[in-house]
Image 1 (cartoon, rainbow, N blue to C red):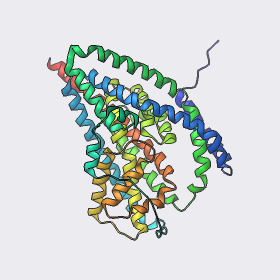
Image 2 (tube, rainbow, N blue to C red):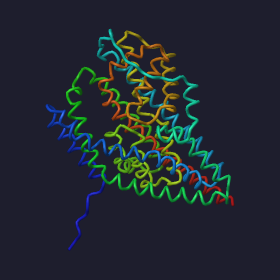
Image 3 (tube, rainbow, N blue to C red):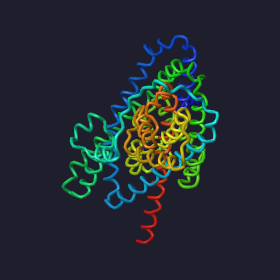
Image 4 (cartoon, rainbow, N blue to C red):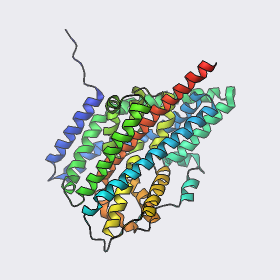
Length: 408
């Protein structure tokens, strides 16, 4: 008797996504029920992902750095990764600004009097200072991902430099990494349940708002997300990584769904790692590149900055100059490095962008109510960018190793 083929995890995630949307539509008139009884199960799923973030970042980066075997190799991959992330972020913000300028004539002009919004933003030097931890345990407790990455890099490089003496500690790290990966597998297996619960609540709560006055602004942002996905990541997957765009979309799909529903690059990291490795990324490279990307690569958020800044400027009757738009590109790119990959982080970045061009930060209140809808798309785009980088860096490193072997 022929054994029945079981549905794959991506298939179950897709089913859960559709089921969550349909269930959410059924609860449009009673969203409180989903918030009180269905969303908590989704929150449990997000909590489990978040609980895993610091152990995954810490052990994977240390393991990745050590497995690279050479401090110079770590440096070479590190600077190429940062250049890749910053380059795609610049492209993203330019796409967002171009689309927003094309459609700004039809953007709704909302009332701005009496707006209040309290946003915490930091100066550039404060961001740089805060990258370096003063208390190792405090960085773990606060889940300050930039600081955790810096700690992991120091430990990984130190293990390489210490040589034989560090072998017992390195063995402990490898064992810890293996345990963390097993926990990750267990948590990922319940992804369909988490996706269903989160999507059901999002649709039930935000359904009526989708057809509101901000629909056009949301659609322009999503047009930017799609264009960047098709053009920038399509070129990267097809021509740089040689993976093939169709295969890439199929491979990254589970991570996209998790990002769309959790709105957190950091929480999606375990799934992004697994998807990227399944597509052929070198685990040594992905364990180094992806945690870095979850923190500093914000392409979707950059598009959102451009669209939101133009929309808010329109409401205030301000026409931004080319110089101001260039400042938005610069500020959004730099802000992406210092903003954690957590839900709502884009709002903090937007406050910095508005301040850089003299627009009232209170303008954020115009879109704060539907920020969740923007966030779902921008987070999805962010993690896709992380994966394309892991695949491309893996290809570059493989070519470098082959070239070195031929010379030898």
